[in-house]
Amino acid sequence: MTPRKKLVVGLVVLSAALVLAFFWSLIAGRARVPVGEMFSAKYAPLVKLRAARALLGIIVGAGLSVAGLILQAVLRNPLADPYVLGVSSGAGLGAALAILGGVAAAGAWVIPGCAFGGAVLAITLVYVLARVGKTVPVYTLLLAGVIINSIASSLLIFLAHTAIARGQGLYSVLWWLLGSLQVFEAWPVAVAGMAIGAGIAITILFARDLNVLSIGEEPAAHLGLRVERTKKLLFLISSLVTGAAVATSGLIGFVGLIVPHAVRLVVGPDNKVLVPLSALAGGTFLIICDIIARTILSSGELPIGVITAFLGGPFFIYLLRTHRGRMSK
Amino acid sequence: MNAITIENVECGYGGAPVIGGVSLDVSRGEFLGILGPNGSGKTTLLRAATGVIAASAGRITVNGTDIRSLGPRDIARQVACVMQDNAASVGAGHLAFAVRDVVTMGRTPYLSRAGWATPRDRDAVDRAMELAEVTHLADRPITELSGGERQRAFIAMALAQECDIIMLDEPTNHLDIAHQIGILDLFAGLNRDSNKTIVGVFHDLNLASEYCERLLLLKAGQVAAAGKPEEILTAEMIRSIYGARVAVQPSPATGRPHVFLRKSVST
Image 1 (tube, rainbow over the protein chains, first blue to last red):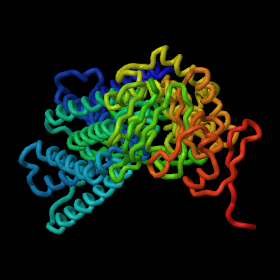
Image 2: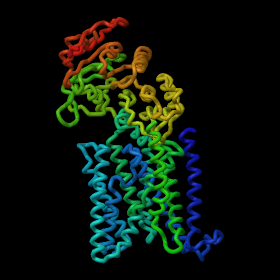
Image 3: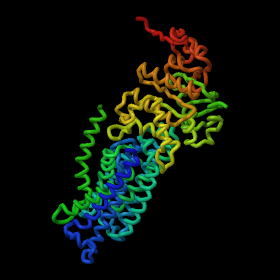
Image 4: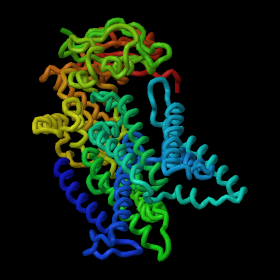
């Protein structure tokens, strides 16, 4: 099958899956909406709320999947996910400061704003630390990401510890760290949607560059790529998309790692096909995880991060096993 | 017009220049070998000539045009490169591209961002795979190939670029003797039949002697000597450049000079 045909078939199948998951998420929940009354006035408020959640799920799932895909290709590391470069821990620290500092009540924008600010700060630090002259070698970048991640995590634990000592509850911080698709206001979803949509669109245009970069920077340069410039642009897109996703939904794990791998297992490694299909698959996966998170307990809702990791963890182990097998061949 | 001219070029990686004032003309259809000890700047010179690193002084032209006025895509349509085999860079498992996908990447300098490979691109890919004799491997993941097969796939990728000039950086490093001969025969054939200009960096002096018309000997970033293999590959020259004691004799097969090593420990 030519890549083009693969893409068309994949788009049809995954779009259908996404639409199905979307409508399923409207009716599923502790209060079931009968299919026939989905659009009736009686259920309108509930359906509207669920539609907003599903929309955020699509945006965040697509964004995290594409952000992970970019880093896997550019860092040439199959274990890369959107959080390896420090975006997540920076965002986590920002959100925790906002929650524990008591400023979150000032408005719905405070937590997303602080989280996004923390993400930008973290990725800027990582970038500055990793830079060698005019180049950004992938190994120093990964190392800087790991270092910033651990510094931010230790600060987060310090914050949590002092909060406990003061008798302050950590529930809302924990809830945020594990991620949720709860929508309190429409505009953060709209802003994140536009940012992530633009990021994915640009990434689609750079899909061939991702292919070429994945066989190495030197060969890519010989094929006419402006390697450093392209790398920097792709890191920037990946970081901003991740920052936007994390600011609106917290740290939902595993999506950005496993969705690109799962799609790759089916359609192969061509990023021209992978980028759009990973976006669709990521959105679908997150909607389904959210349905499970909302319905699995008879009372209350589980953080969605628990479900993505619970589904994603075993898959990741499977991947690691088969991966090792193939490498030793 | 020369394929490549290098005039008083100085270049490196930020610190002291690795190449200090090298000049070199490569005429069209030439098969040139660049030799020199480790760290003498062979690969750096190649990287400057392909525009991967910028020269800090001097001037480089490709087919008569200053390399500074050419974009990387323009260069990649005129100069293709085959590097030494690098198994680590090809991914693994389900991340690995099939040979045909890798060869198609050779069309990158011709493809637009949004566009797909056209029939014309696919023809170029098919021809390149045939020339490099990897057509039968087209659907195999690149990771599952032997070192020699994988190198041929990357050669096909370079051929798909349809360039007049092909640069080689120790293309047969780590390969067995049959693959060494096979791969250099391929380039010698392209040089003779399609008038491709070939510039290769070699460690193996005998291989260079056998295939190149002209040799350039680098030492510490400067041209130490240039000329026909018979003029360059002498015991005295190798002693003064490499600091190695060798004997040189014409090959019984071709008459080209061959280098025989002497051990310095008596047993």
